[in-house]
Image 1 (cartoon, rainbow, N blue to C red):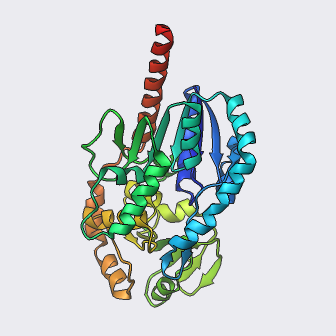
Image 2: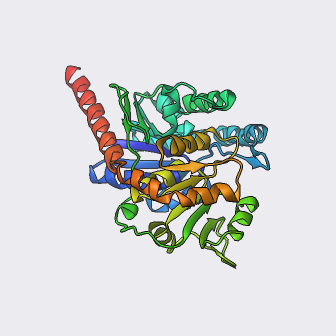
Image 3: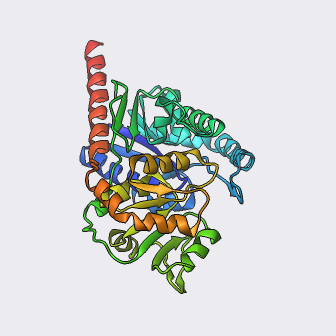
Length: 351
């Protein structure tokens, strides 16, 4: 089958996942055309010759995610598609797509309907379409995130929902699965070292000040900053990242879905620092607390982090009993593609 795969370029979680998925789809004999946006995403997927498009990006100020800025700055997508629709349409026609696959990328959803082809939506945000607002959550942020998800995935034939929780709600169209874990993560042999691994999507002076005040060693990945500052080693994302992750004793990080999945697989306790105003981050952070696999705080204190570190053995015991199937997501996707292929064959036989 010819598969158009739209990959969100906001963050790199979808991108790392896409690498695993594309390799597996090609092994199954499928042809894959990748659509994505953003410099980092395009560069990371360069081996698959992606077509660059424009897509939704989030914008933050000192108070967290800014909805007005996000809306206004994303209006740039409109003139891009007005200028380039003819070219994109020709590329897709030449590819002769059978199926469209979206990882929170809305242009792929629109194109699937314009071409009259089946759409599979594969994302953790899909969970928001199937749950009630969690107790204590900000209702506006929840409804906004749900509306954005519905917009990106409208009319999908199948929804593959990546979820950390026990899944008992799968139906013929909605499949709850464990998140995929990259092969390079699966090959790691984790151990409990002395350092704490920290990953920040943007500088957090408050957290860094707390780290400096503690009698702990921290390795921090943030905006490719490098250098030694007392008990903090700042490192550029690259060759040392996986080793530092595998051999840390705990993780302190923003609450992106992919890193939490990796932490569960590697059995690393996690202290979450969710980005303010971004519901997905808050939702993931709440999972950490409710599952007992970690903690989170939107108002950081030294006492809070020290309390978390004093309870590491408790989280390690809970993580040891938490099961995550690293290949369930890709196996489910391959199965759904076979189902679509069989349905198409049956339709042709009936003509």
